[in-house]
Amino acid sequence: MGLPFRALVLGAVLSVAVSMYSAFAGLKIGGVYWPSVTMAVVAMAFLNLLRNTNKNEINIAQTAASAGGLLAAGLIFTIPAIWLLGLEVSLSEIFFVSVVGGLTGIIFSIPLRREMIEREKLPYPDGTATAAIIEAGDEGGSKAKAVFAMVGVGAAFSLLRDHFAVLPGLLSIDSIKGTFSRLFSLGSSVSLIPFSGGYLIGPRFTGIWFLGAALSNFILIPYLIMTNAFASKAEAAAAIASPLGIGIVIGAAIAYFALKALPRLKSIAADYSEIGKNSARLFGLALIFMAALLTAVLQLNVIVSVLAIAGAFVMAYVGARVTGEMNVDPMELFAMIVLIAAKILFGFNAVLLVLLAAVVCISAGVAGDLMQDLKAGFILGTDPRQQLYAQIVGVLAASLAMGFVLFALNNAYTFGSADLPAPQAVALSAVVGAESLSEMLAIGIAIGVLAALALNFFKSAIAVVAFGIGVYVPITLSFPLFVGGLLRFAADRKGYTEKGRLLAAGAIAGEGFIGVALALIGLAATVL
Image 1: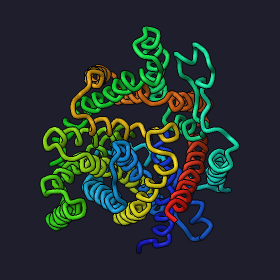
Image 2 (image 1 turned 45 degrees about the horizontal axis):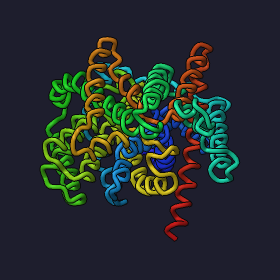
Image 3 (image 1 turned 90 degrees about the horizontal axis):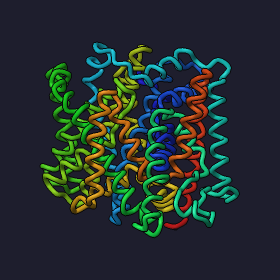
Image 4 (image 1 turned 180 degrees about the vertical axis):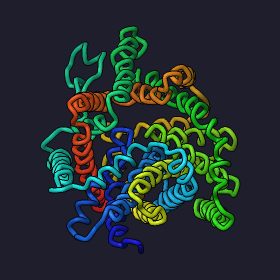
């Protein structure tokens, strides 16, 4: 059967849309959910309108579409750190980093299908759920109607707040002049995204995240002010809470890598030994081409380019395996580990360090996404070669758009602000910009390492990352995420989980897409 070109075209368009709203949402809440299930419903709706479709064509379209979400995640977790450091990055640099990171993630995933999906039968929960959605179909279009209805709600909400200024962007007790507001912080961003994101993330991680926020905003910072160590909450947060939280995230990343990634490195040779001689030759040529591209376009030396490709190779493998086992792809942690290693060993300039981290982060994210899609394809009987072509189309389409999206979002909202907190990029910028470890950062790293090691016995090492982020991001983000997690807890008990996932995803898509659209319009007006 030939390639279904209309599915590729639809997938490319949807990939751009997914990358846009995923970038906005991810910068706002510090995470990007797996878009495969939602894109399966959307692709199904469009292809049913065109008629004469089938489950494999739908799966090809969603494979291309979902690639945009994880590519966007790899960029927003890293590239904004450049702006946060007061430096500059070009559209061409963002494009080539996206292409290299995305294509390396695909290339490194090709040999893993047989081992991880066919032989080990790793669950890849979202890939399995995607296959179930496509297999069941959508008679009457009820699922699609629910998604598109919430896209409309999210879009209308965004327009009312950001364009017509009918709604405020933030509600906080800081407007109250009194002792309580001088000591404590509480409030919420006026957005559907954190509530919906909290629902998708679930009660466990949002609860741990809010625990970190409560420690910071209800205990640590008030104590520092009451003891006259600092005159204001802002000063206490900047000097103590922020470096402490960022340090916990870095420490947890180091421990998580040691616990989860290093033991799996032994499996790499075995898993890649399945490549035949002809495939191995093509595989090697592709990697040489990627390294040469980085060397030529980003003006890196050959050693740095090889390091970037090697890091992408290792982290794509680990990302693919961890995704299959846990349905979580801690791609930003892998990027941070490679960045720390590169800084210690080579001391690159800040921009190159972030670009290196971006290649690794994108590679790990795209690898995890492709393996979810290949799991769905394995269940449905979709030709994996067609899925690889679809993933490449999705990566290239999103890569063309993401540079403009990032420039527009920074111009309209500013990275690191209350509107777009960009938690991972903030932590990354702290690592890149620090000439030496501050005392609080060092304490945080020690706490993160020890906590992750201790919680590993309960298979909860990655939860320490959520706690650390809660310590340093504004509570106006942590509180609505926590409420969203509570809504998910209630939905799980009532049996409304899957319908709620579609509604939450639709709300994120609608608000995120309009947020980016308004930012792009603003950027165009500024340029013209």
